[in-house]
Structure formats: C-alpha cells, structure tokens
Image (tube, rainbow, N blue to C red; front, side):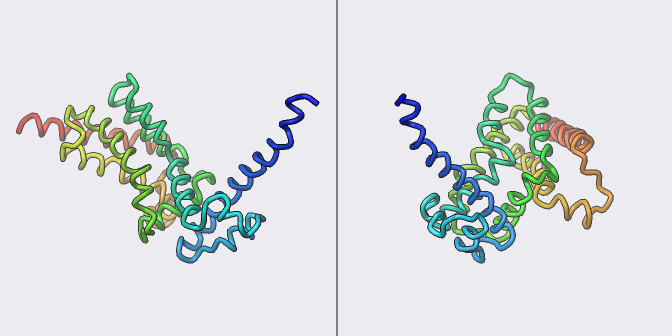
Length: 222
C-alpha cells in the first residue's frame, strides 16, 4: 500500500468536516438574517443544514461562536482586511486607491452572495449583540484605520485628524448604507434610483473627490 493510499481515508473525514462546517455557516447566516441572534436556535440551524444537532458545538463551540463566525464571514464577503491593507500599501495614487476601494464596495450590490451578510450586519447594527465588540476589534477597526490612511493621503493630513474622520464618515456611510439597504433603497425610499455599479461609482467618486478638495483647500487657508 502506498503512502497516498494510507493517507486517503484520514483525509476524507477532514474534508467532510470542512464541508459540514461551511454548510452550517451558510445556513446559520440565513437563519440569523431571518430571525436575529436572540431568536435563532442551533436546533433549527442544524436541521436546515441536515447536520447532527451537536455539530454547532463541535465546529463552533456553541451558538455564540457560530454567530461570531457568521459576523466575521459577513464582513469578509464585503471586503477582506487583507485586500484593503494591500490596497493601502500599494504604489497607486490616493485617488486611484479611493476609486478601487469604492469599486470593491459597490461591486456586489444586489448579489445573492451578499443577501444574508447584508441583513445580518443590518440587524447587528440596529440591535447589537454582546458579541459585537470582538467583531469590531477584529474587522471594523482595522478596516476603518486603512480607509482613514487613504483619505489622509488625499488630504495631506494625519489619519487621526478630525477632518479625516469626518471625511471617512461622509464617503463610506453611503457605501455601507447601499450594501445593507440596497433593495429597500432602490424600490421604496428612492424609487427609480439607478444602482448599476459603474454610474453609481463615478458619481460617488466625483462627489467624494470634490468634497475632499474643498476640505483640503479650507484647511490650507485657515
């Protein structure tokens, strides 16, 4: 018997375990999006995942661990920290970095892949769970720092300057709102809004760069 043949049986359970874990994570995202953290149960998630009732404890150490994994997955589907840090550290101009960042954020508007992540994050923002601080520390804070560096580069100001912080709020709040409330926004709040990524990108980028130019000029003349 070859070494490969000897290893094959042990490798199959690991692959099955990863597939089960991913299936539970995907179904859990849908259930948490529908019911929220407080009303979702591990029993329902396992039933819909066709997994053993103990699988949530085995793979995620309980419902809290599963929900944390779902929140992290939701963040990463919108944009990974690695992608953002690589963009920040690149040799691109500040304007091109901002263009690529907004492009990345808007690229998945209306995508089925973001259906439950957007709803889960919206629920969590409106009704924060006790698990939110850990997710903010791991995902949101580092991403916010990276975006502030891009804006600081465009303004010629330190990343912790109040003008940089306010500009980050001005630029990225609409992007996040579009991601989280895309369907409601385009059908109810602003019916007729064109949410095709390219024209939306050009408009938002022009608006952002114009605002940053005005803020920069204001700071230089003070």
